[in-house]
Image (cartoon, rainbow, N blue to C red; front, top):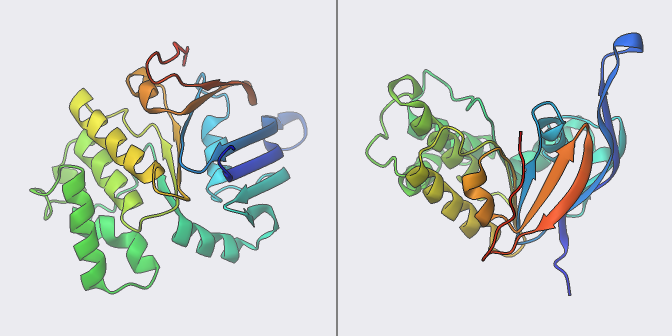
Length: 241
């Protein structure tokens, strides 16, 4: 018996621009990500991967199609309802980090819990735990500008994990990390995915992390070309350029 779906996309279409400048970025995408799995999206730059995960996360609205996350129909929700749903259920790791430069990293990582209305004391205690898990326990009072790119990426990952979301969506989470820290982060994602009712979706060009996937969806020109079931003993060789 297959696992239930965390994410179900049906006939999703997304375009930008109007008239002669209109560009259709997603072309009739149907895709499911299952509970308890790590799904990776690969494909050349500009093929629609980031647009697709933004629609999954509710940060971007599709023009057409149905988007269900843990049984909730995002395409039918108001903007406010989607924002509330995302705050409770989704952790999004951006490629550009989006850390607040005037705050130290504990304060940055605590933001999702503060949005949920948790006390500062509780939020910062959980943030310290999350930062320790990504190897930054000795940098708690540093600001983002005092950290390397790889360290900033790990702060962004801690921030996405701090409120224990059911769905983690990541845009190139290991791109700025060395092999050791990339492995550390992927082990964290595996621990998240194995909790019942949770799922991790990762956009990546980093073939070092392919062995951590359960399935890999290949995209090009706004479409899903094929989905590979990953043999943990012999991961597929997949072009990502």
